[in-house]
Image 1: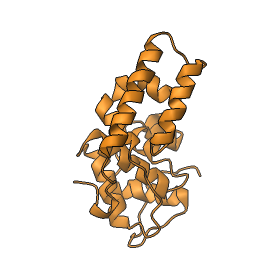
Image 2: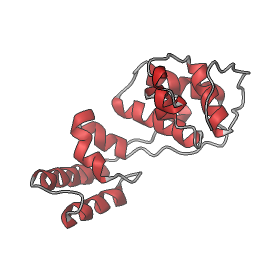
Image 3: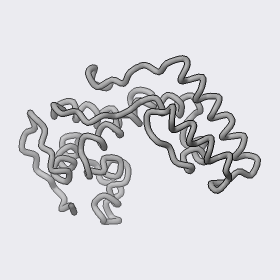
Image 4: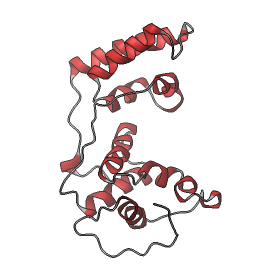
Length: 178
């Protein structure tokens, strides 16, 4: 299931992609040469990156990205900005949860879908609910629970206080903390 059409991110530009690629290579090279968070050159390069990217990135993202994504996907994700959608629909939120849960689409698509949920359910902590439910529910025994997409959206609406148009009443099986 793809990201709903009206929510799809804009296309990455060739110029921005090339600039980010050059910066990422320089950041990676500087880090390999014993650069750390306090290194002035590393900080300067990350500031340059953040001026071009659609969202701010922290030092740890550059240090760790090789462990969880490719260089190309990292650059694509940097060019996608999730926005708050005033008329966000319940069915769209379900489709986003399905993109994530079914791991359909590219890694940047999944990352963008999580960002959209986080942006549209303030304080909902979508990524924690989906990937680390034990942390979200504050109960170590809940790591492997399986929520339906409807339950996931129900918990996000409940915690964030945002009820989406078209949302049915959703029974929430587990207690949660605001």
